[in-house]
Amino acid sequence: MSTVLPISTAGADTEVVAPQTIAWTPCEEEPAAECGTLSVPVDWAKPGGAKVDIAVARRKATDPAARIGSLVINPGGPGGSGVEAVYGAPGSYTEELQRRFDIVGFDPRGVGRSNPVICSASVYNRMPHTVMRSQADFDAWDAFTKELHADCRARTGPLYDHVDSADVARDLDALRAALGEEKLTYYGISYGTLIGQMYAELFPGRVRALGLDSNMDHSLGVAGFLATEAIAIEDAFDQFVGWCEQDTGCVLHGRDIRAIWKDLREKARRGELKYPSTGQTLTELQVIYNAALGTEGPAWRLLAEVIDWLNGGPTPEWTPPPSGRQPVEGDVAHLPTAVLCQDYNLRLRNYREYAALMRVSNHLAPDTRYHPYPIDDLPICMNYPTTNPPHALRYTGDAPLLLGNSLHDPATPWIWSANAARQLGPKAVLLTYEGWGHRIYGKDKCQTDIFDEYLISLKVPPHGTRCAVGTGEESALRRQAPSQTWPTGPDHWAAGPVASSSAP
Image (cartoon, rainbow, N blue to C red; front, side, top):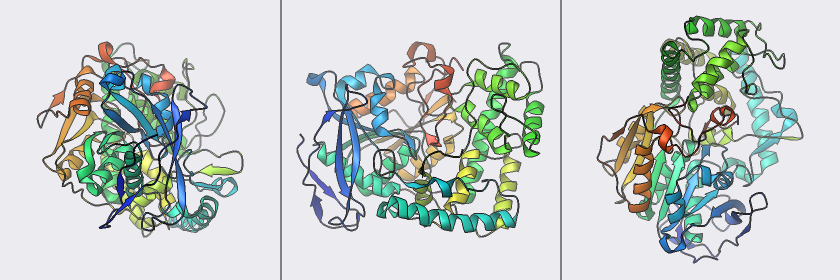
């Protein structure tokens, strides 16, 4: 049981005391962790109204005498489970961090065990192809999303219209209070950084430490979002090609990788490319997905093997499942994309506007053409309101903030973290990892130590601090199998597993 401290409703002058504690019991799936629930308002503007239960999990600090408090974590997504991140915490965080903090995670509202956004599978499975090629395609999406959102709203209930990251930040403050913490210590990755950014805005005086790894940029409109993502995936692909040209162990070494890649894309575009293990016809979007997934770890050796495999080469030791959205079985389909739609305005007026944005992406990314994540999500956001509109961040607190990003991140570009740090002001320090992949904590000793020191002792490095590549083999938290360095879940801006950058 925990001491109850006050929580506040954003925009309100009065405080609302949370009359609750969390009843912890061993987690059914992972008895070494404890699970519980936290009840929060569906609509924070009506704190006395309907409630939703938020699933929470924790691992207690391994050294109670050295315990500082609770470290709340979120793995991103939207759709990533903080509960499951706690289950995997021993392999994702250093022993020192686990010694000093209770590691606490939660499934954000609308996700996983916390009243997930669901739709009828029969409706979801009629989703048109997400890459549009005509006004007729645009019109089909316009009609489909009206049906989809009506169905999902009916299936999910009132929470369907209250899942944005500002609402989640208010839930996070309720969790802080229920944990008995006067101020919040938080580590968020990828889409989980947006939750931390919103918390900094809404509750600046309640921040102890916010470690934000691989940041979203909430100031972006649809044009900026698509363009920066296209630049990021093209850069990551360039890095992969450069590695393969130099490393004789790459299965494509000495061959024209860009030409092979272009041929695969064009075959898929014509409907002539089959997935070798299943015979499924692949779309060009699914081919491009490989460039994103294979560079997140990064898993360059596996990416080369997959490209070679699609091109008629031998089967890799581990083969990823077909990428992108797939039909679902059963009665319901989960739609965490609803969170993204409420946080970013990705709506377009017509196909002409869409085609213009695609031309920009094609110009910025001559090999990859566009980034598959936002392109796969964008049409779903038609006819759906943005409740947490994009805006420049504003932080008025005194606590220092630490942001980090790799230079070659295919999912959350370095420029996103740089922009977020600039918007948050002089209290925000940007740490740059001069390497590759998505999530920098755990990849090399330099940045891992800096994050640990900040979360434990509240010390931030000087502005402009950079960490070189080179200590990955010595300090990666654990070495991953290929299947663990290649993301296979549906969550786009989620943290990949910890992987050593020295062993792509």
